[in-house]
View 1 (cartoon, helix red, strand yellow):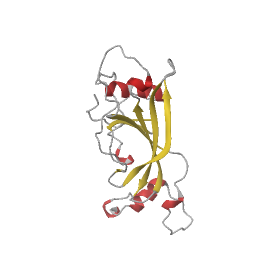
View 2: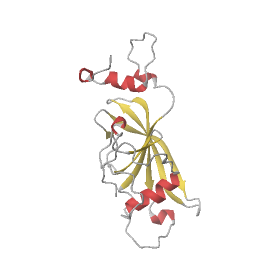
View 3: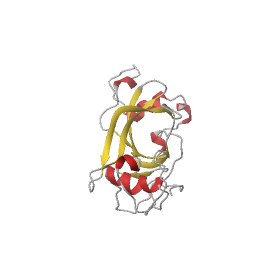
View 4: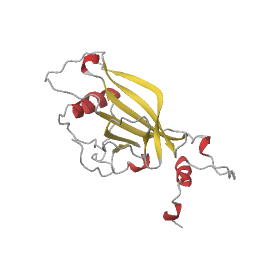
Length: 197
């Protein structure tokens, strides 16, 4: 399930992928952890390494400026990428089944930081985690071994609003830069980028 390449947006024209938190947990993440097929198989598995958010286009399922993918749980506290890291916030929300009222999973929030310091960007990630079947009280018709701690489902998006002021580089000429402009200015390899005239 999901070891295929995605081409930008692998949904048919006119379709929008807009699942609820409960649907992401029960219809996608639970099936992935249970090694059950999921139809349609549209959310890819991007492995165990965290991704820079701008690298997700063409790899993850994209719909309405949000990117979805499966990842294996990282055992490290610092989820470092090539250009920064995903910093966890203190927010963890329980997700409940609307039919049974029982907890089926949780959602953790992370923010992407450029470099090795806490220069936060407006890129956000929501990590969806399963509850163990004992703690959630759910019973499954098919007895299967489910590794609830192995897989997560990630939703990445850009928070609306301006970039935090911690990314300001000082040379303020009154021109406001977007968060992506700030990110590219903070990178050392700008010589390799060609801009249109």
